[in-house]
Length: 344
Image: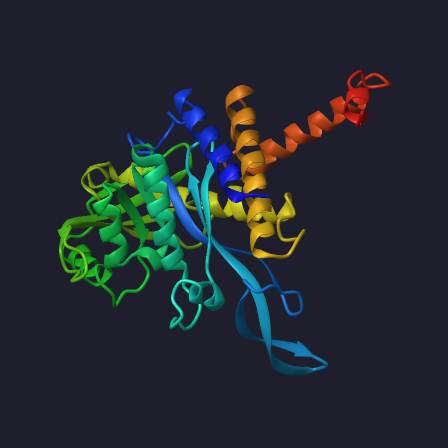
């Protein structure tokens, strides 16, 4: 199957849903997209010319040995929402052989960041202003990535982890000097949040814009230790939002893990290699993306179901169970079964 037709079908679903105002429930005035790397499967035996390879240690017969592992890696972009999440794009990480088709002198596989930059270019070309900001983990908190987002007019919410790297290093010093700026109670989540917030940081040599850095310490009665979120915000519009909304956005990045990767492997069985090869794998992922997005739109928009925040798969699984029960109650024979079985 050709990939372009499947991509066009997925893009038309998103554009049609946008025209029907399906994505009006965002975070404040921003529509945010999470980007993250995903490795759905790996094998020690099965492989194809486009597989990535790595050396891993495994135990066999009581001994540890280093063996070669074959895998495929992708970068996924998911449009986030309090109610509905849909996939905007999936970009494969290219291996050394694939890159040599472009550059004969190239050595080594490309990294997640390289594939992510290519995906952002594609998303900007296809969706443009539909996207307001990107939400990413600490891997993306670097000057070149911030520059790319700023050049396209996008904001960014980027997790901070390495205390010795800028802008986190500067933010830690400023938080210590200025102290806590706000403390509030969230009755809905039953938690207390303390904020440290500094703006106009300009310590990155590879990024010319200003950076806002926020630290949020979340305390819950049923937890022994509080949870700390440290993140940076770039982009003029994104830097102006409230601290509470910014925290909601950075927390929503876990939708790509829960609604996305966990659900796809556990319930959609995408950890199984149905047909191994570069084109077949991408075809299957694109067909699945189309089905997944349509299911999300059907349940949360057409049926108007509420999303259960603690486990977003519960709502979908419940609908599937109801549909299966209803199918079992259909009269025999099913009126349209003869049309499906007619191959003449």
